[in-house]
Length: 329
Image (cartoon, rainbow, N blue to C red):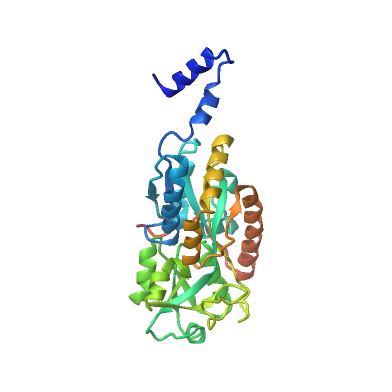
């Protein structure tokens, strides 16, 4: 006898009104594995985040959460997988700044923010330009001087991303930076270590092993205040470059998912990010310890950030063709 039938029989035996199938389904959710989609390749920050959250959420939801990497097109390939899946709560995805930035482009992508339901923002970090240790660039002054005289390749996540917007902004200021999109994190990291790009746009936490291992070093942070862990590294704002886009990572589900399922997932996520293990993870990632934005506050967070992105697009003077796909992998 199935669980649903047993519950219905029990309800009837108690003389209570017959429970609707939708009510029973809500009580049972989740009853099978939930796919955790990562729109980027293995090894990067989004991948690390999904695996950490899956580990913390699985015992709370009492189902497995297999992580599935679907890189490509600045995160849109993985997002498409989410949006073409049934709106039943059995697929969630990491949603990040580079993909979100496409909404500020011209023309905008075919998907909209109304197609997804945020469960919460779980990571906020400062982005940086990094160079290979032991190379010809020691400081931002070295990079800036070279960029005024020669073409400088910057490894980024994809065209139209916040990475790309930042590179375009600096190019408009007379620095000859060129975006080189690479959907797979490992390829971006190998690019500057192997001399295939001069600069990497990334968050320190995502490449901490390389920084701690003295293989990479930050030369500029795109923020207002200096990072206390790197007090000698200047910020974009203090140098007169008014670009400081925070990197965020959120967890989303497809819009149209039953509100009870969304609440169950959002509440579980909110509980997971309070776990000491997750708090330690944020510290290791050099992330803001107050990163979390609840499901209820996420829409306003995105609206405010989108206004900043649109201002950056306007100031860069470079139209963003978000229809341009990332590199094939």
